[in-house]
Length: 419
Image 1 (spheres, helix red, strand yellow):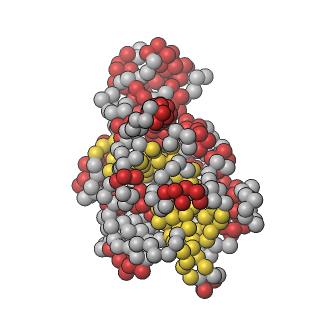
Image 2: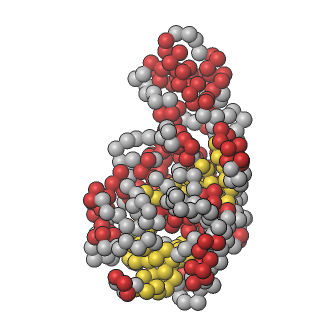
Image 3: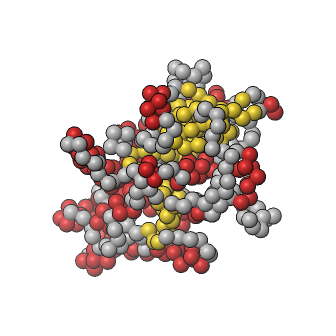
């Protein structure tokens, strides 16, 4: 329970007066003083009831993924009157969020100092690829089911990217002809069976068989929309596909594209319903959380996921699409996304390339560019610079401790238990 007046970022003063602190996330406290004289001040709340583009930065080991976990915990403990109008999709690139179902008993004393208690996330659903489902269950990880994609939902561009083809390649041209004739690729097995025995067809067959072996595409799989659960955080573990970066990119592209389409349609229906004095649609506002965002929206490459994330960043606010992107390499992240972010939470960065990428961010309400502010951060984990375009302020904060168990800490030969 917060007893001091909080600072709210991402929410205009008039909206704080209207809604109070409902729909906000307790992410930490303001840091006062310098060096060894650091002290903690007022609580800091982050608005998560409306769409934002939030960028979480930081080099390895300084709290980037930890901060993502803190924000997800806050989604989890919103009252259902708010949480039920939201749905969160977390693309888990490192496979570390499974532990969030368990309370963080390691830091019970620290949590008590912050007025918190250990608490596992109660509204987290874990989905993993079918191929590793049994492995996860045997390891005692409480997964909720297999994550499958319906091949009919992939666009031609996504198929070409996935198969490492383009329209100039004979096999790519053949695929395009088939796609245009049928309007979709509904079943990989059926497509393989329909191909001839010439060299071009054999090339396409070979690549399709590789994709089939991933066991993630199934013609009976539900639409991406079905993974949206009001009031739930759906964690999609793509960590086991790190050997081929193309598949996680397709997952982000397909999820982002289909949910954008669905929310655009839902928003039009909601506006019309409000005009008639009726209740809005049941489709929740959607937040997508993506770690290692530079892999999905790289500055110097063009996977389908890059354009999808750009669209979310540029026009997602109106239909109700929020996005939290984290990266340890902002120098590799698409410029168009960086410039659209309205909230920055940056932990320590030391690479000149990464600091240079942020040098151009200098709103009129801060005395120096963001890179200068970040370069002054000390070595203490959890410290972060927060830049908020909505309220036009910059803060130095200490991120609060996790209430749920964080499995993203460094491996240690000395550690034998999380308890």
